[in-house]
Image (cartoon, rainbow, N blue to C red; front, top):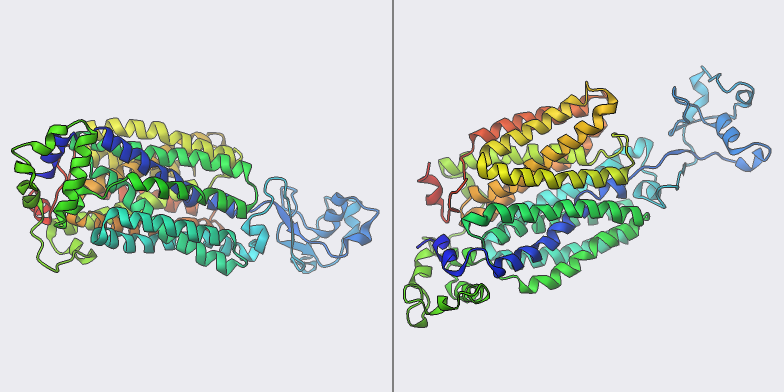
Amino acid sequence: MKFEDLLLEIDGFGKFQILILFILCLPRMNLPMHFLLHNFLAATPSHHCAIPHQEAFVNLTTEEVLLISIPREPDGTFKSCEMFSQPQFHLLLNSSLQPENNSIIQECQHGWVYDHSQFTSTISTQWDLVCEQRGLNQATATFFFIGVTMGAVVFGYLSDRFGRKAMLLLALVCAVIFGMLSAASVSYSMLAITRTLTGVALSGVSLIVLPLGMEWVDVEHRTFSGILTSMFWSIGNMLLAAIAYLVREWRWLLVAVTGPCLLSIVCLWWVPESARWLIANGKVKRAHRHLLRCARMNGRKDFAVSPELFPSFHLSQDLRRMTTDKKPGENYTYITLFRTPVLRKISLCSGTLWFGVAFSYYGMSMNLTGFGLNMYLSQFVFGFIEIPAKMIMYVLVNRVGRRQSQAWALILTGLCIGANIVIPRRKILFLAIMGKGFSEAAFTTAFLYTCELYPTVLRQNGMGYSSFMARLGGALAPLVFLLDEVWRSLPEVTYCGVAVCCGLVAFLLPETLHVRLPEGIEDIEKTQ
């Protein structure tokens, strides 16, 4: 008997599974509040060089003081990173006469003055991460995703070794601790370190939530559970816009997005360990206890006395037969993902796929100011458009299949990004929304698809490796914006090329539609 057959006996999608899924949706909803927080945490308001001895110009208006102190851009706005070495009083007579002598122009010498109309404070204004320090501002997101990358490796291995639930609890506790320490940072270095460690912890949450829920659900409802869990990411996306709109000070914003993790920790009490993992690791008694609880809650009270499954109320021999042929002391590692031919091909292709998915997704999500809307509305719209995209994918992955849906969603994401280079600016918002919808569809399918590709004994290792590749893409995505200094359209060209190439790789993966979740490595190798 396979575990899927056992799920049919206890109802593979009853009250028990619904309760688990909704509890696991709480931490899932909290994830985008941190993963996309950089948009608001590190926002750079308009600014200009601080003008020394401004009190000497008491007879001049603020605009006139700026006119004689700060050079202008070609569009007439004041430059953000340069100032005149001496006041240019002649500009009061004719402001259109900009000095041709660059020797009187210098970099800011006395700090910056920021526009606080939109943000009370951000890390940019806190530590002057502008102009020549602009790279450090963008690097804040990279540090976070480096942490997420490391966490994917660590928690992928630990959750296969010590269980899903225990590691999820550990990840949530660490997320609260490091999230609060980030809010209390007294220096940029402290913030970089604590945000990196927060990324490590939240990577564990991201990695474990979906597989833990899916391992309790039958084949028929697996797609629905995956899409449902993913929906709460989009809800969290929209909530981030609302929270950031209400909380304009970066320290309190960090507290506001970290606090919900405490609720997730409390609710995790009602979530059991994965019975699949328990059986695969020989912990039959605990699996039996959780299965009985599931059966009772789903109204299958005769499950415990079924002569076929549990004769004389003893542990099921079927459960014992379901344990893998794992040798004593043998532990699966990331190296195992590359030992056998089919598993090696799956690992290489899924890693490439996840890199492209995350690289293009975060490339679009972290550019909220280039589409003609204010950043709060852009964040909300980008979150909202993900919901219909997920609904469409729910239909497509069940009709067309996982492979075709995955490949074309990512390819179309790249094409939408590339079209931004040549399409008139008034149509960019429409293309951006379409591209965001496709990118989220690609991400949603990737989570569902990858969970089905790897066997139970290696599922978290496989998800950990895939997540590592995704977070590598996420870490590089914000740095690509700096390429606009080389060529204005180079970031879009890069995002487009990577998305299309990685989308084509998805065609090399096997189809998993209506296929039972593999339990051991032999289930993977013998089906190809």
